[in-house]
View 1 (cartoon, rainbow, N blue to C red):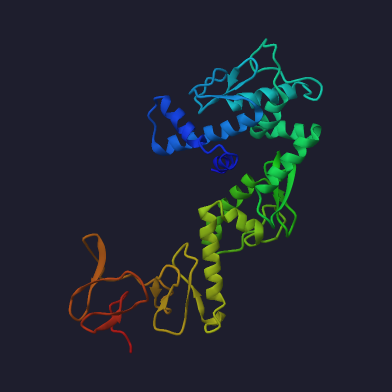
View 2: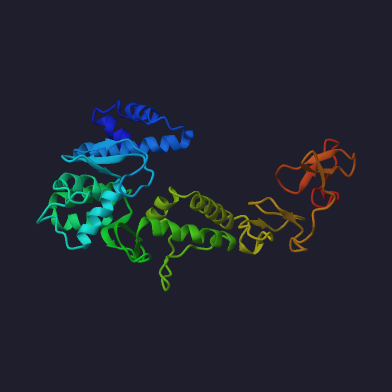
Length: 349
């Protein structure tokens, strides 16, 4: 979407229509979601190819690796084509074998082709799909270093500390972008940060919203707040749920009307909620489970019937069916009889 918006801003407003037309011309029937993803992939390639002065060839199989792809990139002047992954691997292999683009041009992906790879193809296209190539070019090309630094900086919201082409402390790879936690200074790439906190999120919920700590073994810094945490939450539903649950539990704990001695955790396994003492029944403010404080929450729910797929009970007075959809354990029937939902015992007024 960002590439499409960029293209429109540059006067290429017909880009999406052209790409969608090209996709339909292939005659391949695909699911709507898959087709839209393919349109976006081709849009990105067309934008990058235009800057690198390459041509996009709509095909479904790369002639080098044989894999099905959204489109191929043909480079001038020989017009040899390959998918972007093959172009990237080709340049990476050439660099690993001792190639130096500052001394001689990168050869074509097709063996024995006498036309070298244009410099703009390496900098404006291949480097976008290979951090290895980008890191090498940043050391050799000042203009590429400046432009790539500006591009990577725009990917991170303000307030999040970052470094460019540093080593990730988790995967131990040199990455184009690493994010730094303000409190302890430990740094990892965005993918490793997200994987770490998503793996820890269920454990934190099971431990009643326990603080989520940094990945470093001896580090005690909490990371579930601040700019980095907000940035990660925007990319994960699991982290958003954990953040909401943590904030709600903190509000319950901070209630001045019910201080710590009057608070009790929900007895249900895995629930992060709590309830307040001082009543005949205690209700969890997270899952709405209610229990007798004298039983520790283990009293079973009695006289439940299933009627048309709904869990219902009969009013102890008039025997009408009642379905409970939420709220506390105190129920009032249409006949004005008041009782406890869990035990069906009369409510103590």
